Image 1: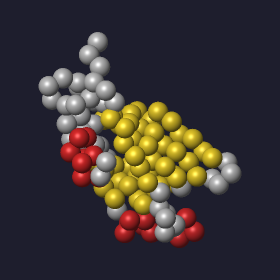
Image 2: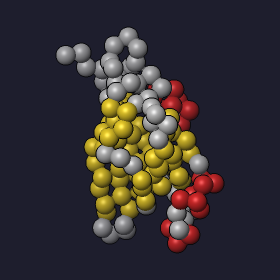
Image 3: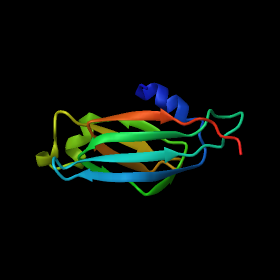
Length: 121
């Protein structure tokens, strides 16, 4: 899923976003961050979604935030947020802006989105 498609999907979700997994691979010091976006499932949105940031080098994010969330790739700002020792040409800086305008960021190689099936309980 491309970033603009993802943002269109995320714009419809209203609810909590939880950090599901923070995992560190001790061999190459790269990590994984998985966020689960809970939606107000019904006629407004298409269900919940999980986003995995792969190859995470650094991050600044809360354990839970509120949707809707907008994600932007702002590689130009990496030098403002990270020491030059941490800058890697293979990584991207992703900025997440939550419902009140708070900005969080993840410095990772890539991301993938997994749309979860709609569950009507």
